[in-house]
Amino acid sequence: MDNNFGKNLRTSSKALPLCAKSAEIRFAVAEGGEISDGAKLLASVAGGGSLAVAELYAGESAGASGFPSCGLTRFFGTQAGEKGFYRGMEAMAVSGAEGRRLEFGGKRVGICFEDDCARYAVLGGLFPRDLSAPKYGQALDVFGAMEGALKSAGMDFSNVFRTWFYNDGILDWYGDFNRARDAFFEKRGVFGRYVPASTGIGSRNAEGAAIMARAFAILPKRPEAKFSAVPSPLQCPALDYRSSFSRAAEFSHPNFRYLTISGTASIEPGGKTAHAGDIRGQINLSLDVAGAILESRGMGWGDVLRSVAYLKDAAYEPAFAEIRRARGLEKLPCVWIQADVCRGDLLFEIELDAAAAR
Image 1: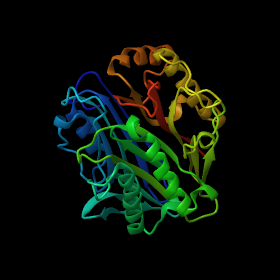
Image 2: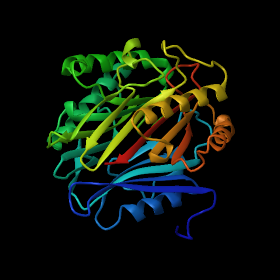
Image 3: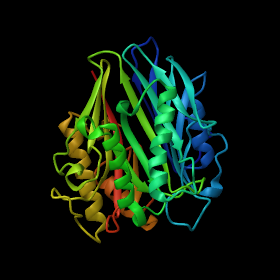
Image 4: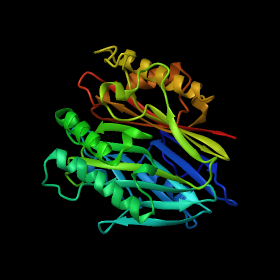
């Protein structure tokens, strides 16, 4: 590790080999330290002509110097107190593959790359075009922005594998967001095929928009390259209570299996909140649920490439750190940040990606 990195910093950099000589997708995570550490790690994995898209988990006044603007997602959280904090950085960088940057609405919103098995698009920092529209309209419009960016990559929404939605004031309008998503999905026939894995979480943003989004899309070129939904052994499908996302999903590539687990919270099999008011109970159940999904796909916590933990109150972080230690997850590549979850009584949520070699 570079001696110029700061103290109290954990870093991780893991790669998946693509179907092209020396081509790879690399997942980089910097947890803690200083914001300059995140920029250094990103530079180390995204040098030499690599393409990269990053997520920066820091306050408004922390800045984004050293982070490429292409598809950058700046996550502020929901508590409007301290604005100069920095929690960490995550990025996906691609090297050795044919690729290019994507633009939509005059902005660089992501990257597109491909190997012999599939074409991929990684989108970030997507905003509605009319910030004066009602929140429902902004939600519909951010889907339009997503489709516009995908079109520039020769793809459409049927290729979307995974989405992220960051809703400002999420507890005030999550129902309207779900209605907007359902309306879009109905129009595009999504319910008749694969429903993307997803995270829906609260966060303010740099544009003052009601919503900000990210997406990962895959257009397979070979029959053996395909993706599908993965059920949760400990929870009912989210579709059962009209929240339109898959609990998890897996992309099968000739070189690896890539698993993404949607935002996972303390929800019992019937769909109701479990352990209300008990942060430790909610953290433990959420980790149990994620662990059961990993195990169902022949993976474990050591296979995790990246993860984000969302805490309703920053004061819960010591409890999360204690439980990580007790479970032997100190080395889990994970950035934590304060954020409202989609229900007022949910105190914790975690999302993660993992992979296993063929």
